[in-house]
Image (cartoon, rainbow, N blue to C red):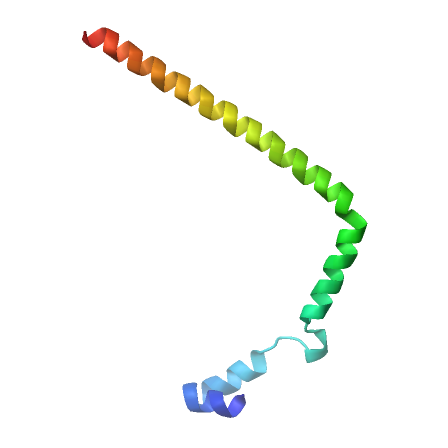
Length: 88
């Protein structure tokens, strides 16, 4: 990798990039299998709790947005009716 970087960006920049990447030891790099195992453990442990919390949050947000939109539509229609009455 270092040789290819030398060709692409020059030896000085390549040396800086190689020493900075990765900023930790290679044994600390998470593999896809590590992430899948973590996901499985978290899913097994928190599936019911997280599902209920997320569902409640989405439901609450949806209600808030729905009533906000309905209120806005009613206000716009009322303003349009008032403008029509004033103009004619």
